[in-house]
View 1 (tube, rainbow, N blue to C red):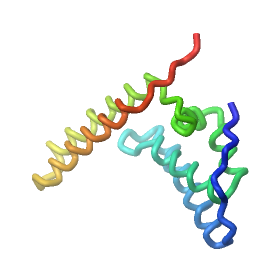
View 2 (cartoon, rainbow, N blue to C red):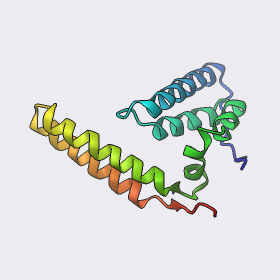
View 3 (cartoon, rainbow, N blue to C red):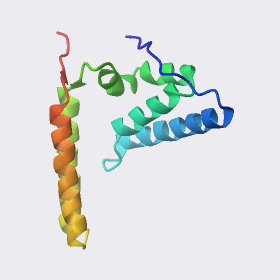
Length: 136
């Protein structure tokens, strides 16, 4: 599947290179996030795709059509949704990391409440996203 719609790219050279640099950094963080549970993968890849869409058609196409990274963001970008397995994994990791961190590691009560609210908000957002119907 090829995603061809591209937002208007920046023609200012400094902004273009800043966006490319931010996109590369977000891609690297997204890849690291595959292996580190507390570092989110998909939001970094979505941010990288947004940066590349405004700075480099080549990098944007590479990321969106990548065999391993692309499927994590293509469904979101084209509006078809994310796989049920990805939803389950994300929600499970949110609830295995944020509430225990809030209750065991964070002393201020306001920070505990903020982490619990964040877990609820992320879960609500993920549940509202369309679920990608995978083929047979």
